[in-house]
Length: 181
Picture 1 (cartoon, rainbow, N blue to C red):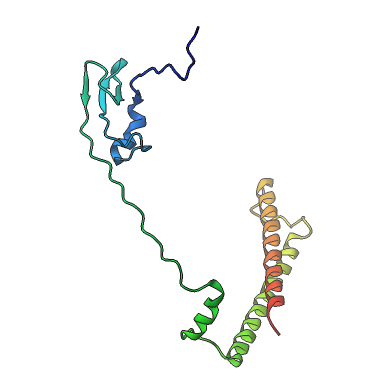
Picture 2 (tube, rainbow, N blue to C red):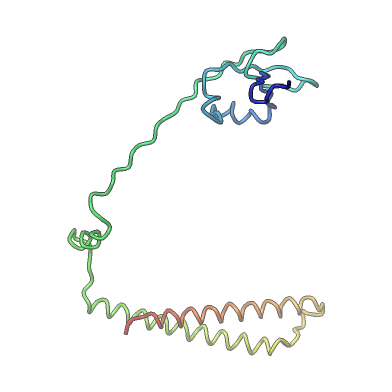
């Protein structure tokens, strides 16, 4: 009768290539708690002269490595806030957090509206110029565009510039729409 697999325990030394163990040896960190125990690590010369790292002395030509102990540092605790999140607005206002009176805020809002309006006008003028140059997908060829691919590249760049300018104008209109009156 064959023995079940879970009852048969074969003990083989763990073979690890030098490339796989190099980061572990350089930084002194092991992958898991079972490896962090005080087991000895040996380096042996394998076939073709390739070094092998083993967790047990498995034969001749193996040398025990003198590795430093693994040091772990427990993380610190974070202190829980004493007040709930709902009271943080009142705490900020009562603790001297700077507040702006309504007249100052209105003047800032009107200045912002003016700046956004100017930017929108500039973007619309730029968009109008780009559309005129694009000429519905048939821009006039320039003297340096004897190569047809250069013409196609400039046409594609114009199309991208128009799309970007339209998106910028839409974003500015949205910003203006979000301002309070």
